[in-house]
Image 1 (cartoon, helix red, strand yellow):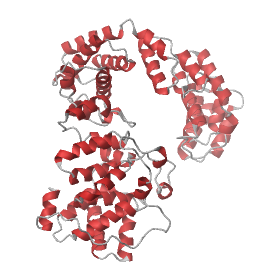
Image 2 (spheres, rainbow, N blue to C red):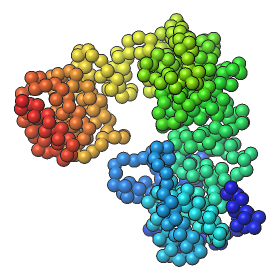
Image 3 (spheres, rainbow, N blue to C red):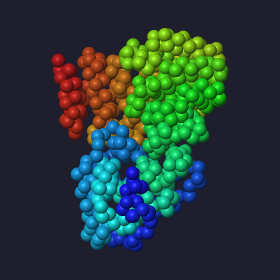
Length: 546
């Protein structure tokens, strides 16, 4: 449709000739172009951008404008809004459309500055669709001038919002010579969504899936999610092969891509093909597990082949004698799903999930989990220093009923990975006391208890606050234990930890409060800056007065 519109405007040609791309600079001198910043990194064709490229030059300006301590992962804000928020506003698109065409036709300093001020706030996702609709409905679009302005915004702007609009316009105006520019920007997941849409408009149908796939293999977060969702219609067997073995993996949530990969990769057909390898079995298991977990995208309730693919997966996995613990974890999740009394089996029955299918599935899962070699595989995995491998071994050990807590405790004692949350999943007071002692040995409580503030305590540098919170959230079940942690929690700058400390005291009951607790609560209440926490502290104090 875009190509037909452009051909109509240009009388059947798609000349990319543009007016000179020199425009008055509306930003402070000395700021670096985002495109040039990214282009400086020499990234081999098969690799992702290095870590140093992830923090864009405008990060400080973005944080200053938002006034928030929270930092979105690259592409996360647009990804979350695109998946979970409502539609865009035509009013925003119309206003931007007027400013854009005015600046393209008459690129004076005032017009460029007015346009740029609208783009800096990074509301591109909510503006692009109505903006492009407005442009396509305009009969006298100055194509050459608009292309020059789009290219300038995409390659010269130091602000991400302007870059995104520039990319979107390049997709609308189809300048094939800018494909490399779109790929360079698309390698950063803040811009992948915009680049893949633009590439989809710019490249021929025969080229676009290959281009998307090439880019997807170099991404792991929201960028991969945006691309893989668009590869569902692929007929390329090599891409389908990749979708089932690697494509679903991402650093956000596998649940976002499970359905797209099951359908786009033809999971049922792959399991029926007889061409089975361990990578397919692991991938199929993780895709099925994510479909069952459900969440932000289509899940098992939408997967039409589920009642055929899942039993077939069990048959194939058992015959293959696979010894990857990821498969064991997936099968355990299938078993819990098949016996879930809260599932909507009436709705699932329409997709073939009959009682007979479920009964057969449970029996197959039990056989698979009972295979004699699994305990040895878990034991052989305990020594792994890799955090992900240890997590898999620990989860598998829990499924098999093996002793896991002691392994977690030893890993935390050696500071190999954070295990506080899992260590508190016990009803044994002696073990809880060991956890309390270990935390007090590994962290300086005085350094944690610096006084109440409005901090969130998230991200790197906040490991001490995270550890304290993980233990505090379960101390309410153990009256009188860990009082020094309660004291530190009430003096923590992190709001959540103060709340957790107050709730723990409330759960203990006043009879288990050590001497001086009432006075400590009153001091905390007097110093508390957060209104919700102040109310909770007041409630807790009232419990002590009764």
